[in-house]
Length: 417
Ligand code: AMP
Image 1 (cartoon, rainbow, N blue to C red):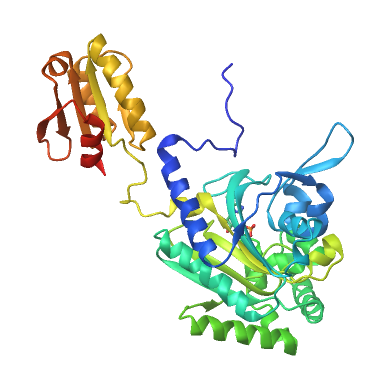
Image 2: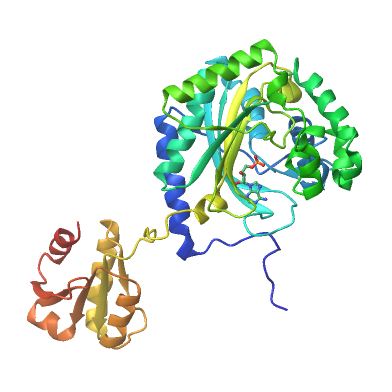
């Protein structure tokens, strides 16, 4: 039986990879411009890092983690997100000892046992950016600005920035109680999952897609009306800084984010070009995460962009594949030797050059060059070699010229670069 990939796990094929590379390169360029450094963290961590960091009463920890016992009996988990691991690395390597402020980003796969559908996979890629060690609302706005700058730079349109504040340990419990009481009176409308969430994590009910649950929360109290003075002050400043940066936003009081660790600022960027899974990216502040995993009191803010969703939104007319600069068409044994030497030198000089390995006819080689969208074709027939002049054809203009075989490398480079 043919072995196929697991459901929800995708191959990213060569004809798609140009988009991925473009997105990753743009992220590196934009983020590093904002003073961020890349960090690479393991794909597997101790399960408790996520259960404590993300929170027991979240969908991720309750039912979406890929958890297994290794051969030594440790419970390990494939990372469902990167923030907790980045925080762990910051603590473990005492990155704070030199400067408490760390601006870090990470690109890589995450794993969640969700029901696969368009835009939702079991292995998916995220670009994560986090700032640890700053409470100042200016950094909330700066992180959002960087995100929007990045999304615009990759060419996304039709975006909407939504923001909210989720309060903190001082003010959220009162809101949570209020929300719970309100929803208790409507519990008959709630789905089975939300009946449970009512007791474990009532804020999550806002995210439920079941229609009756959405109806139940329609007139629910809003967290924004329960903020303590500090949280209100923080949120006002974030909005002020966003306005100073010329960023438009929409206040979405129903956006509460799925993870337990969020405090204060929460944001999402949604695209009206996506279907039901319309969030391209989400993030926020999490001033309690560090205490959960390591005891130190370090504030943090960041976001995670879903790469598959982002890539599905890239402009359709943009070319992402790097086509060959040159296709070398060789005919006969002697000319293949010449072509082999030439192409090796071209590769060393950074020229994307291709050769046909199968000794096909000139016509068939020209067809291949056309298919590969090579910019030039060099015809290295034995006749040409004898004459000491070869033919260079420009595939865009269809014009061709003869060039001397001496100094061929130099002449080709002049044409190409
Ligand atoms: P989260 O870590 O849940 O805040 O998600 C951040 C972003 O990751 C979302 O806005 C999505 O773009 C993306 N994302 C989350 N879960 C999945 C998934 N199962 N498949 C594809 N993308 C996802």
